[in-house]
Length: 245
Image (cartoon, rainbow, N blue to C red; front, top):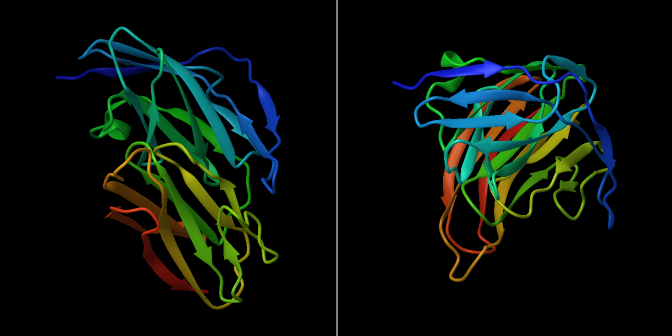
């Protein structure tokens, strides 16, 4: 039987700004802390930064350390969805999008977490941010560059080459390395039909491997649906869903 428990960390917070060039937007992140201990197998995951805080940022950055057992991946359960963070030399970092209100985050070593939110203590972050009409998140399994695309009713296209559209769709997380997430939000949707898709932009090796992807869509701050399929070749694009406002 696995026993998991949570220990809060320090109270200092580090706020930083990361300026992106070539059309990239400014990303504002908050580093939070906590510690999740996994007794079987013995592993200690330390998240660096304060927990139980309030933030006005829509994105946070989690960094931490793993000790007591070898782990290639840390699995983060963020509001019931899984995000993976690769571990290198005993450390990891992950960019995490938030939803308005309370956000619950827990962690464990390995690539999956079984009923983690119900059985372990969690880090709680209150996000004082506006509710978005459209909130979408893409994650995938392992290395590679998978892209999230949102096409608007007025023919605007939000993706890595146009991270902010005139109508207000914003790609605020563009992950080009592994696992994701990628995150597109739109505070006020324009009327009409929207199309969300994923594109296998670049593989991490040759030949390209099959990649499983997962997408979560929230409309007007309510979860619409989860989607999960696979991509098998570069430049392959798959429709995720269409919806109307």
